[in-house]
Image 1 (spheres, one colour):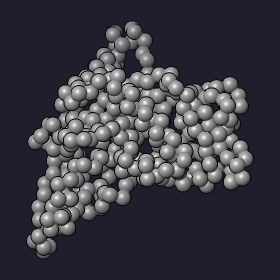
Image 2 (cartoon, helix red, strand yellow):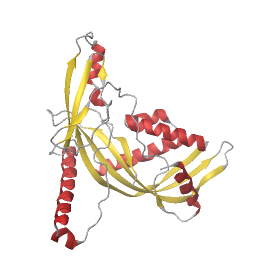
Image 3 (cartoon, rainbow, N blue to C red):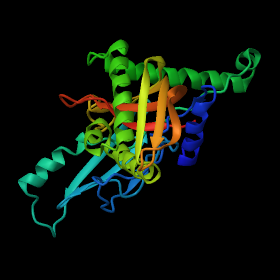
Image 4 (tube, rainbow, N blue to C red):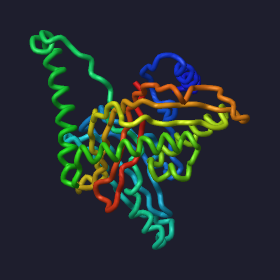
Amino acid sequence: MAFRGLLQGARSLHRAPQLQGSPYLLGNSRSYSRVISSGCIFSLSHEDQNAPLLPRGSAMTLHSTKVTSWIWISDNCTLNLRDSVRSLATQVKPSAQARQRGAQISLFSPGFVYAPYTPREPIPFWKRWFTRSGWRRTKDDVILELKSAYAIAKLRRTGYTKQQFYLEAIDLYKKINFLVAHGDKKSLRKLVTEKMYSTLKNDIKQRTSMWSTVYWEMVEPAVKIRTLRARLIGVDKNDVNKVFVQLTLEFLTKQRFEAYDSNGKVVAGDKNKEILVRDIWVFEKSLFHTGAHWRLCGKIVL
């Protein structure tokens, strides 16, 4: 969402409340600085030529250790990453510190949203059950639901409950919006993934170039929260337990917003008016690290 759209949304506060996207988290994608280009090649396996391909230069190299990987989507609903590590004869042996950092590579977020949510267009009953295209559509819908069910089932083994997660998710939603509105990048870092942090820093920079300060508030309770999609991303082909989980949530909330210039004059919005906002956020968590917590890894704009 461009800031021009945000300004228009802020002006609409003076009119009747309407449904629109959140004015802060934009869906731009940028590489995060912790991933160092090493010339390693990522390619799709012949098993699934429709799988998402990571961009060249998204692998990591630590001193003399080179990582070359192939990524594909397997039939068991998990994205697998096969690593082949080899040492360069012309380089010296990696230091203990480098080896320790290499062991922690998997702590980083995969850096992308796997299977971004898109709404499915409704089809007539007769077409779904009495045409070939309808049967194919029904099959695809069932597969999508089974993938989400598989991810949720694996997540429940770690103690996940929907009620508890929704409480944590709405808390993250409020904190992240508040920190972005106030430009608190230091506190924001631990609540989002590396890639999302880079995106939000740019959003904060654009916001401060337009407005000196911003007032933001979410009116509680949230109107609606629901899970749209769940997916698993594997990082070790030989260990199915080494996975990240991504949950896509829809938030429908009432918010108040007001922006000020350097003199404290209101230039957009009205904090006395409530506006209905719909956001779709993707949260991510590692299931194989002790103490891992949920972080925002993406926002979907429909």
